[in-house]
Structures are given as C-alpha cells and as structure tokens.
Amino acid sequence: MYSFNFGILGTTIGGEETYGSWEYLPEEAWPTTRSIADAPEQPAELQIAFERGLPVAYEQLSGPAVDVAGLGIGVPGYDVLAALNRIGAEHGVGRGIHTGQTIMGIVGRLGFEAPGMLILIAAHRELERLTLTNAQQTTKATLGATFGDMLHEGRYYDPVLTDIRALLDSSQQRVTGEVRIRLHKGNVIALGCRSPHSLLEAGRRLGSTYGHGSTLWTGPEARAFAHIYATAGVLARSTAED
Image (cartoon, rainbow, N blue to C red; front, side):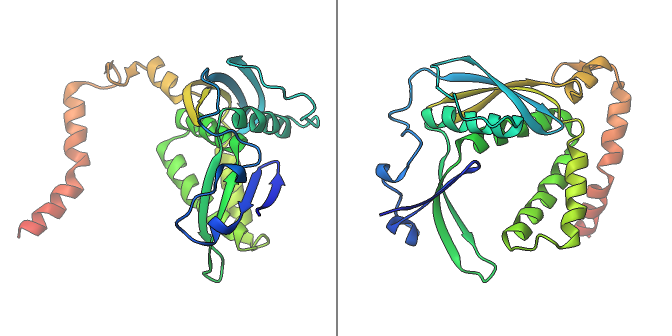
C-alpha cells in the first residue's frame, strides 16, 4: 500500500520502503512516470520561453507527440508546467527520493515525481548562467536555500522572507529568453539558450570571446591584473613560511 499526494508541482509517495533509508520504491509505486526502460527510444526536444524568470510558453520541436489537451487553465506558468509534467513523465523524467529533516530534527524520506519542475529548473538554471553575474548566482543560491528552509518550517510571515523575496524578484529582471531542452530516458539536457540580456554576447560585442581571445585588454595588462589579484594569497603564504 502506498500513499500519494498529487499537485501541480509534483507527487509525493510514501510506503514501507520509505520508512527506512535503504530500500527503493518498486515500479508499481510510481503513479505517473514511465520507467527508463519503458521510455521512448527517440528523445524529445523542447523550447521553453521565460520572461523575468517565469515560464510563459513552450514548444515541442521534435520527438514523439504527447497528448496534453485539456491540461491548461489559461494561466501561462501553470499551463506550461502541466504540459511539461505530462511530456516529462512519458520520457521517464522526474523520479527521485528525498530525505530531509523536520524542524524538530526528525528525519523523513519520501519518493517524488516532479518531471515538470525538474525540466523547468534545468532550463531556468541554464538561462540564469547566461544572464546573471557570478555574484548574483551565488547570493541567490544561498538566500534561496534559506528561503526554502524557512518556508518548510512554517515561518511564512517572518519579515526576512519579504526581504529575501525582494532580492529574488530583482534578480530575475533580466532572466528572459528561450532554452532548448532534450528529454531522453530520464535525462534532462540543456542544449542551448539565448537572451537579449546575454552576458556572453555582451562580451563578444566588446571584443572578448572565451577560449579565443580578447581586445578588451593587452597582455601586459593581464599580467599586471594577475599579479595584483594574487597579492592576498601571496601575503598569506609568506606568513606561513615564516
């Protein structure tokens, strides 16, 4: 016997195997996703569009057709997620086991199916890498984890969540563009992305292409920068040698 909690974000699964930490759920415990063995041999390629960090549309470019009729409710983000849940499930995407702790320190373990969310996370992460600075990405990841933990603990009305939400919302202002994704036998592969706010294209316009060359600086300038940038490490190393 298994218990299921169904929702647009995914499905959680509980049963005898999840009461301990060693066993994996059997095939019959997964209600919506195909096994990798039963997933189509032909991959599916999708194009997902984002505006300010939110998914607004998708298009299936190739692969076996999946019936998604009747899943939408007229809300773009919901409709995209509902369709991706169905398409991803057909390709064996989205299964996993989560082990976590409650606020009291009690450890719990659940199976889950979340094909649509895992597809969107992969696509959104790829677009963020193209449009956000390293500092934005690392700060967002740290505060995002804090935000999730506090929500899980039921601390929704703590003012710090409003503060974190403001930063997260601000970080998404340039996360607009399209991402190509391949689904194949349980895998979600980001094939490419493009954005009007691409930092890669900004560098190319200014004369810098990673791995090829740059006209933004000269050789002597690069050596001088490396010398200055290494100063803190050189100072620390010199004290250790003393």
